[in-house]
Amino acid sequence: MNGTVPHLVQYQGSKRKLAPQILQYMPSHIVRLVEPFAGMAAISIAVAKEGRADTYYVNDLNEPLVNMLQEAINHPEKLLNDYATVWNEQFEYGDDHAAHFYVVRDRFNAGEKTPSNILYLIARCVKGAVRYGNDGKFNQSPDKRRHGTTPKNLERNVYAISKLLKGKTTFSALDYRDVFKTLKMGDLVYLDPPYQGVTNVRDNRYLSGVPFDEFAEALEVLNEKGIDYIVSYDGECGGKAYGEELPQSLDCKKIMLNAGLSSQAILLGRKSTTYEALYISRTLIPHFTSLPEQAVLFGGAAV
Image 1 (cartoon, rainbow, N blue to C red):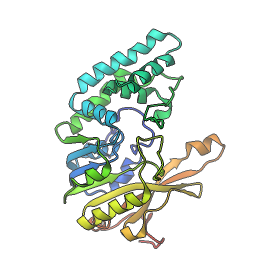
Image 2 (cartoon, one colour):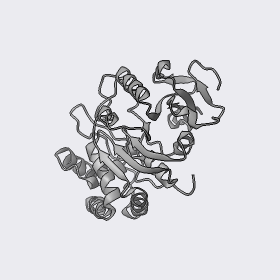
Image 3 (cartoon, rainbow, N blue to C red):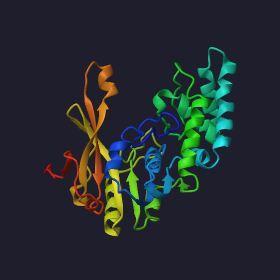
Image 4 (spheres, rainbow, N blue to C red):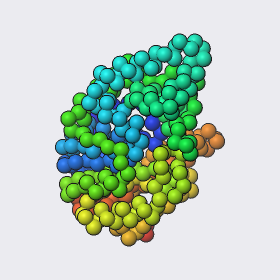
């Protein structure tokens, strides 16, 4: 990947650092890249940086997040001006600048779900980890050690992202299955569903969870339609698996990507490498004449 790929702010679960590995398994030319669980749209940005796709479709059930991305791409100056206003307010609180975070959080939860408010909350919250309570309200706490991404640092990245995606991107805040209804041949779908989770219960990092069986059935529909897709799903750390593998009946190829040392393990005095699984759809596999050695078929058979 040539040059630095721009990003807005730290966002837990983002695939920004894994993007160079993920892009290895994407075609050199994509008619439309679709992200049904876009988050901060890290993969769309990375693909656009390489000029691989003609158009992009960014979707996430978190509507304020999608609105923020849309404004960053289509109206970067407005987002930057509004963000600077919110960001600078914290200095009116003196040494208790973290108190400002709660003020903005209360405004957001009361209905002021503006792009600048959610961007500030993400920029200031602990580890960029978005959390929602059972009542659907943002309930993460601020990182009291820092003030969040400065408007100056944000400006460079916002304009870079806008230049890459403006005029090429459509947006929505739909259930992923509704996004699937719009798919057509030539699309490449990159899926990074809520961490497994994937149960019927609410995942407090997202507005809703994704049941495992429902998700597997939806992928089978893509198989039947011949739609290319790539899924980030389960993984392992320190020899311990987390999350459930996708069904073998999908005929995907499973790749294990090295995500680096686990920060949690380091805090506990251990050095454990995290591996995240990537599933390549059966319709996409013929695009590649060869795959790296870490590629495995379901059942563990070497490629």
